[in-house]
Each structure stands twice: as C-alpha cells, then as structure tokens.
Length: 315
Image (cartoon, rainbow, N blue to C red; front, side, top):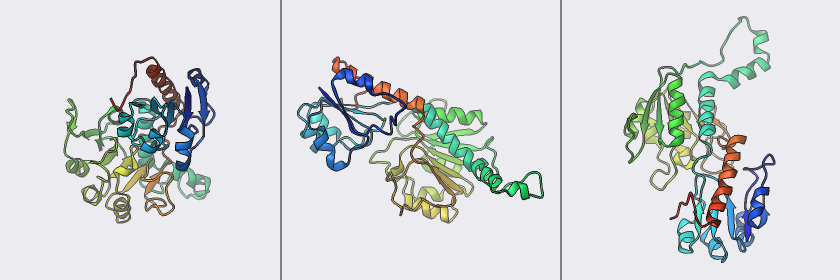
C-alpha cells in the first residue's frame, strides 16, 4: 500500500519523525502540494494524509485504491466528505490534540491586549526608559482582567479550557453554545453575549450557518472598551465589517490567529491595523500538540488497517 503525505511540513518541520508510518507501506512525503498536483500525486494512494491540502471529488475518483483520508487536524472541511462516502473511503480526523495549546494562545493574545507587554518591551529597547523622567510609565493603558466578563462562543473542549483559565483570573464567564445544553454555565443568545462581554472569544467550528456571523450588526453591540479574539476559523468573521468597526473604534481591539485566507493577501483589510493583533495561525503548533497530533494520525491509520476505524467523520 502507498501512504501519501501531501503537506507535512507545518506538522513536522524536522523535530518529529515520520518513520513509524513506514510500517504501513511505501511512504511518499511532500512538504507542500500545489492544488494543481494533488490528483497526480495521490492517484496511487491507499492512504492520504492531509492537513490543509484540499482533497476533492476529482482526486478521490482518480484514486481507485484509496481506503482512507486521514486529516492531521480537527477541521476536515478541506475533504469532499460526500465523495469519500460514496466511494466507501473513511475520513478520519484528530478531534483532540491542541486544547491546552490553543487555550494558552488565547490568553497570550488577551494578555497582549490588556498588558501591552510587547509594546512596552519594545519601548525599553528603543531607549524610552533610559530617557524617562519617571521610574515607571505606560505607553498605553493597562487593563485588569479580574471582574471582567468573557463571552465564549462555542463550548467544546477548547471553550471549556478557556473558561477554566478565565475563572482563575477572576473573570465572569458567559457562553453561547448553539443547540447544546450546558449545565453549570450561563448560556445566552449571541446578541446578549456580544453586548455584555468585555472579551468575546470564538471557539466554534466553521459551517455554512455561521460563516461570517461576526458582522457589523453583532460588532455594533459590543462595548467600545471590548476585545474580540478568534483562535478558531477566520471565516467566522466578516473581515471588512471588523476592519470598519476597528477603525471607527466600535470596539477597542481584536486579536486573531486565523484569517479568511491563509496566507493572507496583502490587501486583507485587517493586516496593518494599529488595534488588531494577528498571529500566523500558530495557536496549535506547540511541540507537545504536534506530537499528539502525529501519534493520533498514526493510530487512525492503524485502526482502519485493523478493521476497527476510529475518529471517523463520515460514518
């Protein structure tokens, strides 16, 4: 059998090993695969391992020996699920590997918004403290989290972990968790959550219903002192609406680890805004999280080969 890794570099830039996967058969590895080359590279595959490389119906129908598409991520919208199911091909994902890392990154972003550590560290490097008339100063106001309200949209594993950390900071937690009962959590409608929160943090999967749901209407309900954080999926936000809201100070600032297109175009309306922090979709990328991700991907393939598939998203 042949295992094709279409885009392995982000998962393993060299500090992990693909060697265990060789037990399954011939391993063909690519750092990245252009869309134009996917079908050709995968036509003899028994297993495709993909992270962000799209696996379309054309690729699926061109690979007669394909048995499994293993997504080395939680989100699997890059796979044509219907085409895979019609062809009797399992699609497996990794539902839990980066909970702690993403929650940690969420607070790294939030603390940068509230404490401006990078801004003040740079100020010292620039000589501002040496020239200061005072022993202490601030370039921008510092905000205390204790007593503030964080609104969490989506209350899965990551959302619950963010809530746990927020409570440790003394924050009040409110949530919106569509169509799910969440005992012990204060759940409310989106418009209420956006209007009451000092921080809104997105932790929901992307689907047809919520694409672009963070729009001008919801943003207009936010406090002018509030922050918006997104470590989930970029397409949850209407970026033009958010850019306009930030420039008009409808909300204080945003911090994003994801954008609608990645890498972004230079014309992205959020890139370069003074009150918008953007990191390059690396909340998930700690060594520990990537190690768990690779191990579960291996286990997914092994389970299918043994006739006992797990983490199947197209049953």
